[in-house]
Length: 213
Image 1 (tube, rainbow, N blue to C red):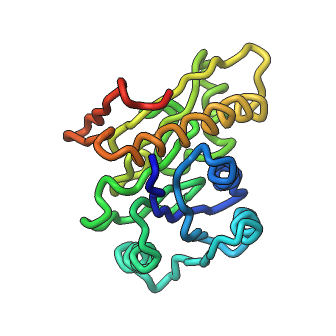
Image 2 (tube, rainbow, N blue to C red; image 1 turned 120 degrees about the vertical axis):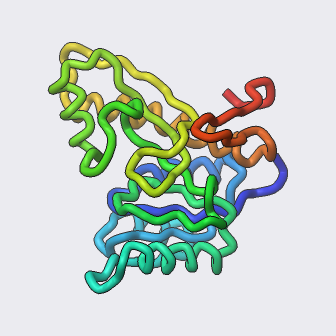
Image 3 (cartoon, helix red, strand yellow; image 1 turned 180 degrees about the vertical axis):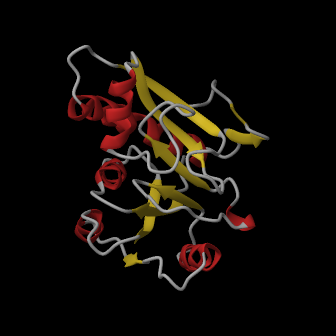
């Protein structure tokens, strides 16, 4: 993995996933070059992590007069101008229309095992509260390609974590996030290794003999 993949990261909030990816690039465990960060709001704390790492950032708010298609096009225009080969959602909360030239080039991580506890409005602590309210015994995280629906695209990888009897939403979130910090960089390394991942309909195939674990 000698070539660094040019990546734009999308954020909407605290930026902890962005911080993890930045740390992985600094310790050279993840061969990507984060060439830009897009935030859907100027109040996103993740913008501070981008600034601290010297990564260019921009705030693109969805204006009331903009259609979803117009907003999406403005965002992906930024990605094109940045030379992004991959777009990585890291706590991004806005629905997007994925243009044809970015099909299977946008990935997201969700803090539950899709198709459970996902979809519009299911993000952050809401997910973990719903898991506990349902009495689920297992939760986890999912990395998937992004399509034009919330948490719907082909699943690349998942990692399960136990739900403990004394869990709170906060403690469960911490355990799931620890799994996210391992799984997301691993999947990105698979993508960097050309030919390791391919999409066939809703099935994602990859060569496990070559994949990092």
